Length: 117
Image (cartoon, rainbow, N blue to C red; front, top):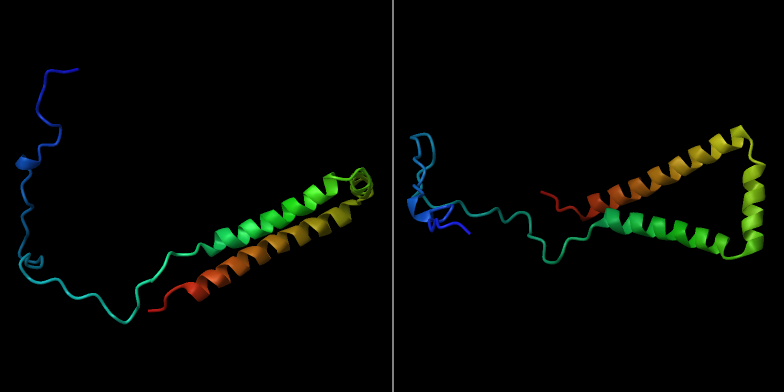
């Protein structure tokens, strides 16, 4: 431990900043906040997190349902082995469309709950 007893940020030595003539006077009252947009009354809901959480929960539930039974696992592995490159591309496009759909729903929910002003 050091023998220095002076604080690292001596607040008593901080000087107030000098304002120039173009800056508003410090003694003038602050303007009242606009009353046109109401302040949020409760906590903010993160709709993107809710929508993505539901989407990933549904995906996890389907995958859990598949892996809990041996016959379903075999059926899925047989289906994957018989995919052609064309059907694989189509399923990839379908999955990308599903991701965009979830992102769009999250954006719509965010826009509808955003305060307008």
